[in-house]
Amino acid sequence: MKPKHSLPTPSTDAQLHSEKLTQRIKQQLNRQGRLSFAQFMQMALYTPGLGYYANSLPKIGAQGDFITAPEVSPLFSQCIARQAAQVLKTLDHPNLVEFGAGRGTMAKNILLELDAQEQPLEHYYILELSADLRLVQQETLQALPVHLFEKVVWLDSLPETPIEAVFVANEVLDAMPVERLKLEPHQTSQAMVIFNEAKQQFEWDYLPITDRLLQRFSNGILHFIGDPSPDGYETEINLNIRPWLKSVFEAMEKGLLLLIDYGYTRREYYQPARVMGTLRCHYQHLAHSNPFFYPGLQDITAHVDFTAVAESAFDVGFKIAGFSTQAHFLMSSGLLELSATSTDDITKSLKIAQQIKTLTLPDEMGETFKVIALTKKTDISLMGFQLRDLRHQL
Image (cartoon, rainbow, N blue to C red; front, side, top):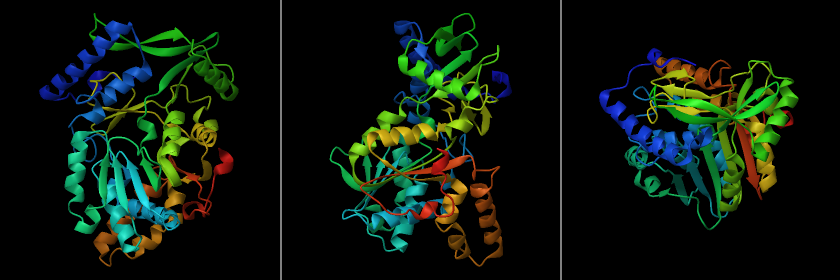
């Protein structure tokens, strides 16, 4: 684990902010004795006003902690829009729902591209929990033509009455709280969180697994990794995926759910060599593995097990309509065609070429990021998976 002193020291105000959240988490610890890691991650990311995704500190872009594909290039969102349009054409009441819209960049470019394609849209719903991000999104989207801005509706929760829509979730699953497991030769443990008063910091604590679901999951991991070494094998499980997918399925009358995130199939995820799992934190564009570094000031994520996504989606009623790498999805959705019509300016063309490399090269976003399509009452061959469909690997 990377020591705290190797990361930039936050400002005094930021440290005070983190201390407020730390005290809130400690209050919960005093009541419970210890927290599961998923409980800690939930509080670190989503405590109203204090958690990383619920506070006003910059997150995306140069002043933040990470960059997302919609911020890399409008081409990404235009490709998403093209795939969405293919399904929206089949709906009597075409709507689009975006989960966690960041700064509103993807929403803006999707709306512009759908308009350019003359694809009707009743509403563009944004499900956003952060009041601060809503303000940023409103500022971004007010630059749109009035007839497009009027379509945008912000939601606090999924629609209670099912709607016909394309649902889009870009880098949403990786931000869901995960449980952390440790597999050793003679026992399997669940990672818990305690507070060390002497050191004044949060620490790991490990207890034997008592939850049946976690135990069944850890037994399944052994199938892939064999006998763990004496040093142990640490990994994550996202228990929120199935209930979340069930809620989306129930909110969808008919349509498509498009999930874009970094992750692996189960066989790749639980490689014997991946002994420290995929838990990653991001602070001022530096990646490290200490989730206890100034709670509320850094992003905490874990890679997505797309096999688990597919299994859960099938269980709740979705059809698995496609699975591919981000690179192949974008290529199938017209990335090169869109880029060719973007500009005649050589400098801009070089910039676009660099953007395409970032989005598609294997050592950039192209291979690590995957796209999975889940449909309900929609049985068409999706354009984004024409070049390469990897459902057989799930």
